[in-house]
Amino acid sequence: MAVESEKIKQLRIMTSAGMLDCKKALEETGGDIEKAAASLREKGIIKAVKKMDREANEGRLFSYVHHNGKLATLVELNCETDFVAKNESFQELGKNIAMHIAASNPLYVDAEQVPKEDIEKEKEIQKNALENEGKPANVIEKILEGKINKYIGDITLLGQSYVKEPSLTIADLIKDNIAKLGENISVGRFTRYSI
Image 1 (cartoon, rainbow, N blue to C red):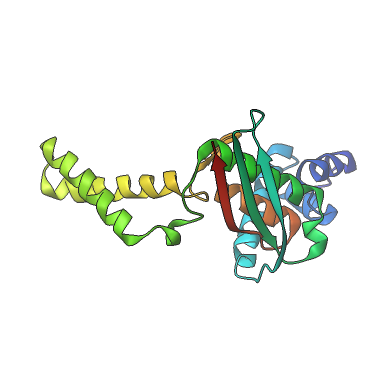
Image 2: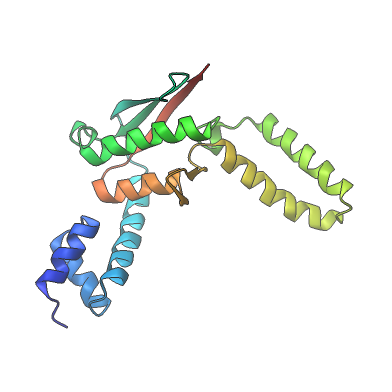
């Protein structure tokens, strides 16, 4: 199926994908721009996951200071090259993550940083609550797993829902940018100050 060059151009603007990728996606989806964009995004995420193992030794520090001057954040966002660190999309990502940290107050970057003692303590609290509700033991274990995963998601930056787009987690937001920029991106560390 021949695809109109106008549709290719429109899809390219929407996704920042290459011309050939846009043409192929449009051909695969019968010229449906929305389906083609979704297909490109999905393929980009798969490529992004492959890039997540690469070293990210460059990057920038980003800050956010709330308008009342009583809340501020500082976040280290890493990438592979200085070229990407200077990219406008990378800069915007860093600012958005710094603002998100101010709004959502995560305690850790990811699940690996959460101390085992904290997880065990939360498990005990949730287990006692479920037992007090009279839940059977075999059901408690299944419910407990979900509650602990939610707890970890709530206290870790990468697990939290992005404040500007709650359907995405911060991890999803970063993966989208890895796909868009073609380099691994990771959060090194962050801090949040408040008065």
